[in-house]
Length: 314
Image (cartoon, rainbow, N blue to C red):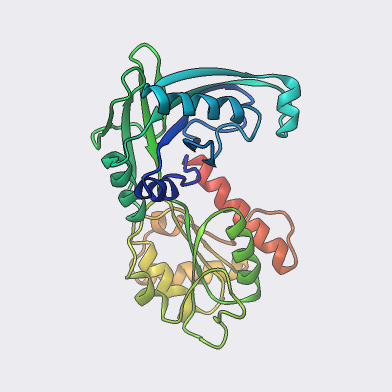
């Protein structure tokens, strides 16, 4: 997975306001780069920015080049070296190098508006960019799963994955801590619990809440590999419908709270419903990394840690 901050949605609002925008994209890195390939920054004619390509150390130089591209209408690729001193300023152990593509956008930029609509629909975007001419094409036939730059062909393939989404089943104490952490990690969070006296905005102010049975609530959504689900109630009446529904879908991480004994009983119930061992192996149970967590906050850390570990390995 290589999802990054979505700067294109707020950038599209700038375009609708008729602001002239240049878009800077990290297309290649070497060493301890502060931003991964695909990191982006939008620059308007006054030097105002959205996003980042370096965490701060080369931003000024990129802004200058962005304003130049708006003036001459030319796409350019710039190489930036990050010295050891500059690296320390943004929390790195040593320097690195970045190659940044800088493109002036059109006011009525159909490519940007199409990408923003795909982001809204949680669709994977595959963009082919000629780094010499600036020509951009959305190409669904691209088979690769991650962004890359081919210097010989002057071509950058930009893959934009949907924002990670987390369904939390059960408005328990651990869920409160997990919502806080997942918010910081920039997950799109939905809490599902039919018990409306537990799942309230007072207890969970920073996420979407659905007071419904999990299978019914989940049926309103489309699933993808950036969709993750955890069940936290210990109550089969609530947890099992979520597992039964999600295991039949194209989904990322699935985890269930409970001891080894509880998980064994859970798997036995699901087996009786026709789920095979391959299906059951998708469930991370007992949930979370083994960090000897005790209190709700520690357990939430172990859960989110395991989700992130799963995402980076797949």
